[in-house]
Image (cartoon, rainbow, N blue to C red; front, side):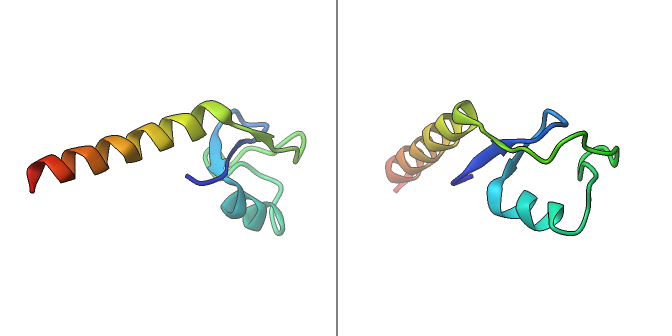
Length: 65
């Protein structure tokens, strides 16, 4: 994830994907329930984890070669 956000349903999404979804729907893609608001909060922990995971993969792949 390059720009993870958290929606009102408590799930994390890639910003561009959830913005496309919310442009035509007002429900959660995960639960199907109505979202009480369309506010998207930056998910800093998901961004840090994604960066860490990518670094681990790069390290593992480099060591395997």
